[in-house]
Length: 95
Length: 95
DNA sequence: CTAACATATGTTCAACTGTTCATATGTTCA
DNA sequence: TGAACATATGAACAGTTGAACATATGTTAG
Image (cartoon, rainbow over all chains, first blue to last red; front, side, top):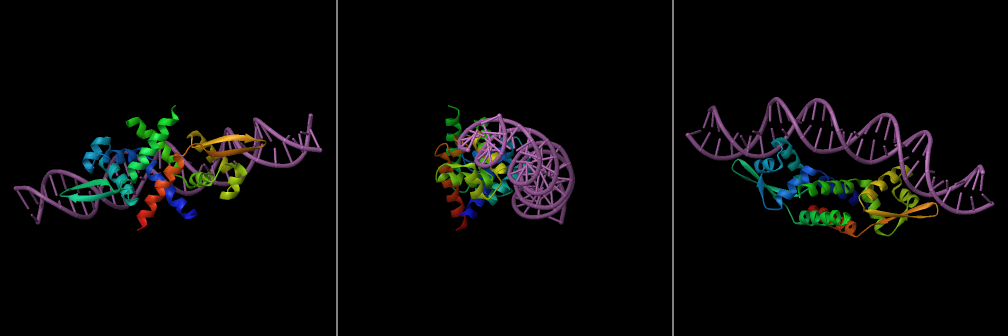
């Protein structure tokens, strides 16, 4: 169990960065390629690509190639659940 | 919405550290004072106290004083939900 | 084959973070 | 009141991290 708690912290570390959270949020509305995501976040391609790699390593997103482009998508619905509960916490906090 | 995503990242940042996750996990079984928590994690009192403060600032825990001791407890059940879903993700990942 | 495009990777550096040590604050009891 | 205890706070230092820049890899069209 102790071990799992370390893995858990590592997972949340991935959610604990605004760039990555914004990427995940963008992907909630469906798969997008790197260029689309760079534009959406108004960040350079390299920064986005680096962060997507971390999301991939944590199995939060999956990728497929289509021609020259790489399309990223959420890999399962845990992402949506986690974001949703997090949002609830933030909202209730403000009351 | 954009704003909320930054707050969300800040929330997950708090979960993204093994010391804090272990503290939250300890508190799942009920309120505990700082000494108990220091012993449980085998960390010095100061380190634990510093981390508890961050948990408090994010409204993840609440405190009450009883004599010389401060008893910490989870402030709501979002913590349990978030940990649970995170665990699911980790577990499924290993398949 | 090669030019143009899309994305990934390696490196560097400033900014941030967690722990430790020292000390301060607050509480109880004699 | 003051000693002993429990916890909080401040400062400093090492380790980590995200962004930027340069460059490499992979793909398509001509």
